Length: 176
Image (tube, rainbow, N blue to C red; front, side, top):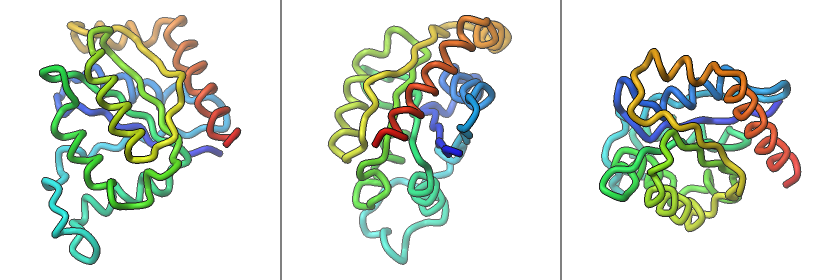
């Protein structure tokens, strides 16, 4: 069983990125378990002085979750042509750890307009030594209300796209 950790880069209650990672968890193919990390908003601001024995509990939980996962999925909105601060903060907690080194990672997107964040996030994660899967997933949810988002995510074509993306990522993980 592959254990995949999914992280939404958004803290919004009605986040389309959070809805997308939750849908990925519901639609994981056989042999994969997708767990959604929900602690982004509880992470303290990264401070290198707080590493080692002083690592805050929530940061240690994130580090352990990434370390224990076979792969990581990130679904990220774009704010001002960049990666949201909360997600960047989470990644900063991983920088000096081995958790990211050679860890398979896949990016997913809930908006076709997040091109700058995609590029920036891929560069950040490559620099951290994540093993980036070149496949991915985009389901356009921008501007949709929560009820509309659920209908879109439950459409057979989108369910198939999620399963195919996860299967491709699982094959990438197993092939490493």
